[in-house]
Image (tube, rainbow, N blue to C red; front, side, top):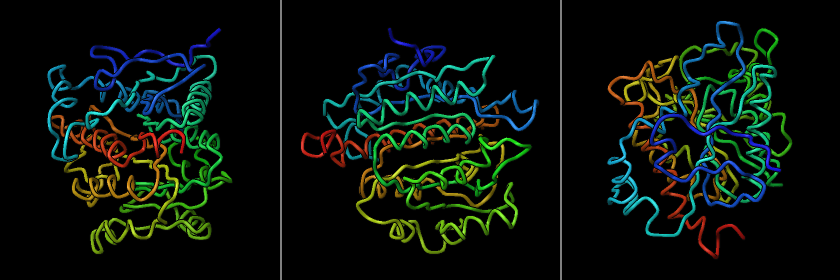
Length: 327
């Protein structure tokens, strides 16, 4: 009997771009899957009321059905054609990982179980958060691929805290937890700037590990193309994007608005460059706070980012017979 690990999204049109909802993972089969993981692990009781937890459904539902129809079927100059390029690409929405009042960690456990099943099917996984802590169970599940993974991290903050208030699975610890996973063979952190939770100790720990840290200012000076060159070619990559790594002029809907982040052209070049450099097996977009948005600017760029990622994987031949699921 199938154990239901997810809940359906709320409010119409329910799923991302109207793609079919799948909640049975026993014989999972898709090219691309979208999964919501709304609830991180809070550092305080006040943190349990987290505005970011509504973000997965907000991203799904801010577009009208007419706008979705255009996104799917009209010519997209970002991609040079329609979203799926006229190909039979199976994209599904898995809903949101179930949570529990009795066991808060069940949410992470369910997310990890789902991600393992998705990765085991050689499906590209797009995860919608939630705060950055929700990336931890998704990254853990990457060991189902039995491959060495290069982690690409876009953020204003380093996220190398070992714990905060005794909690080691929260949003400030995601990259340190990733560094402890044996299949993570390289970490590239792009966009660091301003003040975050990191102390000098965490910076030294990241440097001692060998993390490749590119501050936002270095990125702007040398260009995103040069940053991409520092990432090994022909690798297997996972991309985690904290929305506050993107400049608040185009993504104001975050809690930690910090000047100087990636702009849209840089983000576009990063997505397309990375997808074509090797194989990106998954990505997440986290830390969006809808109540802080201004005129849907954040939602517009979030949708564009996700569509560019989907369209780039299609055009890179990820799902073609010769280089798709059997490769």
